Amino acid sequence: AQSVSQHNHHVILSEAASLELGCNYSYGGTVNLFWYVQYPGQHLQLLLKYFSGDPLVKGIKGFEAEFIKSKFSFNLRKPSVQWSDTAEYFCAVNAARYSTLTFGKGTMLLVSP
Amino acid sequence: DAGVIQSPRHEVTEMGQEVTLRCKPISGHDYLFWYRQTMMRGLELLIYFNNNVPIDDSGMPEDRFSAKMPNASFSTLKIQPSEPRDSAVYFCASSLGNIQYFGAGTRLSVL
Image 1 (spheres, each protein chain N blue to C red):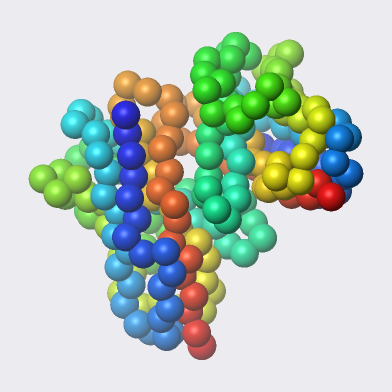
Image 2 (image 1 turned 60 degrees about the horizontal axis):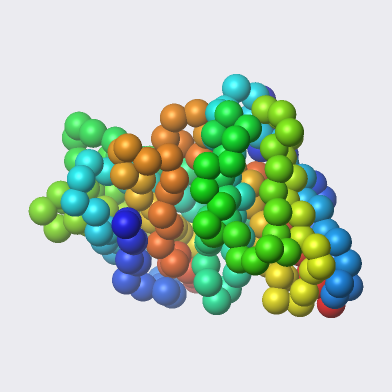
């Protein structure tokens, strides 16, 4: 079975600070990896995804994530956060032969102006 | 495309009443998923369909929950009878391939 672990439940940063949210998964086979973002009161939106190829993937709004296969990790980064990045961030994994996503518990990011 | 459409956006009901949540997936998508989101348990997959056929309903918490997909453009999640612990945000998502697109959700409050 797949599982996803997000290390931080809550992160508080000031504007312009750098962000890194940790995500580890457990599954021995080929995986597809995702980060979704949920702004307050809104639905989940895809931030970025990794299927294959370059392990450093770039998403919307200046976010990027790096897939490190040896560490089973897919950490999300942004060099300089903005107040508008305040949201909950979910890491998700999909074993390539399955149709379902397994989500982490989410990390709530609060960016203070 | 308008995206995944859910209705109602908010539902307030009393314990014991039947609740029906509705979802219209993105046209052409062959998978449909129902999730429940709570503070305590996060995002949980309840059931999913492929080509209108239920594939895995192991996440459905109890027999009070049922879901149907009578055609490719419509699905319902029904709770009968509802209980206060069913209060949550219920999301529908659809996909064609590996990317799931989520609806705006239904916020259910059972008093």
